[in-house]
Image 1 (cartoon, rainbow, N blue to C red):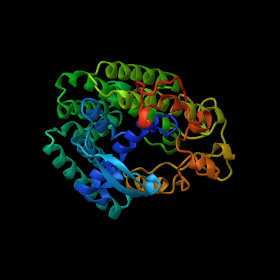
Image 2: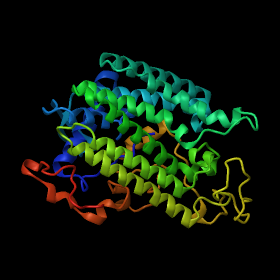
Image 3: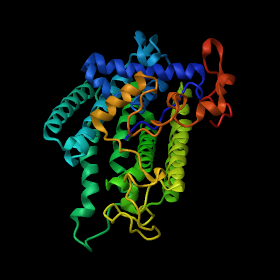
Image 4: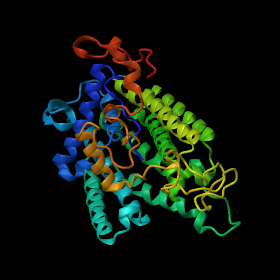
Length: 413
């Protein structure tokens, strides 16, 4: 669901990048301190937006603490955020990760089809859910929208199969993104309570819905080719939404998000606007550039035209001639789809290993696995660093701070 905001040091001012890392490392350490080392697996880029929003609404700088050397920081120390916003981010991350694991178990995805592993994953998800709910309670946050999101999503995705023919239309795209929108809106709205800015609630909820819808759509775009190849559920395929229409939906969601952020009362807006406005726009461009190149190169394989459905026989769709099925050893190399990300614990563990090796290790489903060492080491994954160098040096103020509003220095990388 989350992970679309992935800035690198070359597209954020030095001060903003240090702040962003302070929130990211603060989230990871908050998970460790309150819930144990294993819970650090749920650390994700987008979860820290809750912490960033909380700090942005406060006039005084958020409390920070010294952290020791870490492999993810090149074995350097850092000043990391220590606040209620970080604890809320930890609670949200735990609850959403628990829901995701339970969803994989219910669907029997990949390794979760094995009973011993499914049983262990279910126990871990219950532990994470309990821990996230307990932390939410200490912060006065009602976690119901988050705990119910996965169940609502699963129900919506099963409606077409449950309804008899002629009983009514399947859920639309906006209906399918609803649970994600409500979950993120609830988390964003509570940052106003923690920061003492209750008048921001309406704009925070609007920002949460816009970001939730955008994250859901981008995830669907990125997974579309793999989901079609494996027959897995994808909201774009289920609703017959093409890439052009999906891009219009994403642009509309991004416009709503931008308007909501502009309506917020933020004494410290720079990092929030850099992440929620500019970096989400970069995420949209990145997702559709990849999806468009896959479509142009034919990497989605035969049987995946606009009218193809997951249950349709591969190789016999209109507009495609029969041939080797995707992944067949005899298929042309350009038409072999990458292995599907299994999600859950295995995906989280591999992501952690990728970070610990600075990108040199890449799992089998990573698009950069076959790239050179330099390509695997790239911190952005979107040719950002090679295009702009240190593009935001123009924004550096005293002590590496940022004298601009969201690093808007005319850099489009």
